[in-house]
Each structure stands twice: as C-alpha cells, then as structure tokens.
Length: 257
Image (tube, rainbow, N blue to C red; front, side, top):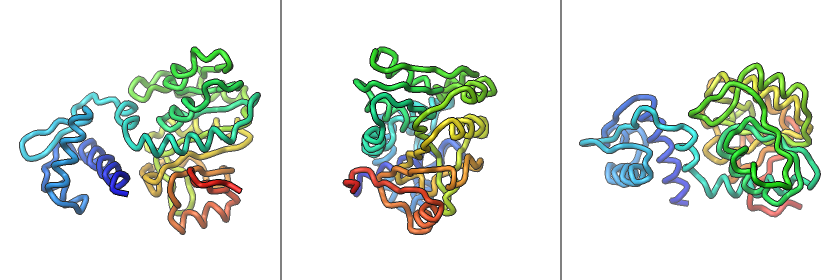
C-alpha cells in the first residue's frame, strides 16, 4: 500500500513544482500533509530518477523536461496490470485504436506476437510495434507534439473519420465524480473525440490516480464509454455514475466471471 501512496506523492510533488516553480520542503510538506523527512526522501528518489533537481531547502523541475518521459516513469506496475487486462479483451484479427499517452504505450507492449491491426497517433506505440510483423500498423497523420510524442490536429481528425476500429483504448488525465472524462490539454480533445466516433467499443484505461485526477477540458460523458479498466475501486460516487450510464467497471487483477 505504501508504494502506491509514495507514487501518488511523487506525482503531486512534480505537479506542484511544474505549476508553481521551485518549492521548499516545508511548503511541500504542508501541501501534501506529510512530514518534512518524508518529502526529503521523495525528493532524493525523484532526483535519482532524473525528474527534478534538489536545491537548498527544496527542489525545482528544470524547464524543458519531457512530459511523456516524466509520466512514463510513474505507476508503471499499475499501468501494466491495466494493460494486461485490456489486452485480454482483444481477439486476434481485430482492429485496435490506441490513444496517445503512457498507458496506451504499456498496452502496446502487451500486444506483441498477436495478429492485429493497430491504429495510433502515439509515436511511442509506433516505435514499440514497428518491427512486429504480425501487426498491421497504421500511423495517423498530423502535427507533431514532440514533448508528448504524439500527432494532433485536423489531419489526425480527418484520418480518423476514414477509419473504423473494433476497440478504442482511451487514456485520460482525470475522471470526475459524474463520470465525465477530462484532459489537461485542449488540443488533444478533438482527436480523442474523433477516436471515440471511430471505435465500436470504447475502453477507458484509468489508474487510481485518475479519480478524480486533473483536467479542465471535457473529452466525453460516461455514456460514450463501454468499459473502464482500473487498478483500484473507483470511489462510490464515480462508480455509481459510470454504472448508471451502462459502463462496465473492470478492476485489473480481479478474475472476471
């Protein structure tokens, strides 16, 4: 349990430093409600991982950090459990649409050796699957967002209007108590909406930190989803909102009947 809590703290520390600039150990301790000694240990670990720089009495996130690379190091085991569960839903011969983001990348790693068509605007997914000859790989066009390793814009959306997938595996930065799927980056929302229209079955991949998570831009309502795969029970209000909308909530690691 402590591992999950530590990873959650690490995420919050990085977010605080990105949004507010350098912060002292005391500030971070008060914000997160933990002891200064705990914050110091967290900062040592995050500096070892190359995610921040410790300065006298606190820490700073260097400008130019790679958001994808940063997020990719957070909650890997949780994302892998979700990815494994999601991969098991897909039958050979089907077409899979993978969203941008790190959880979709973890899912791509689970698809090696399968006979599938994979459509994506996620360059890390492309790099992961490019040499797997059993997979027909379709890369969507668009404007390159280097730091997020993705393609976005009207070209991406136009491509999606010409395509159809059996499954869409969608990422998110947050799920509100009402079940609304949110994103922090406005430019990604039209692409995600176009993906939803292109997918027969829409599966949201959301680890525990995404309830409620972050994001000011609404991607879709719960009615647009078919399944949510998570690694922990969603809070009762959110779970109720999802189930009322007809969404199946699957907990990764639990045996499904």
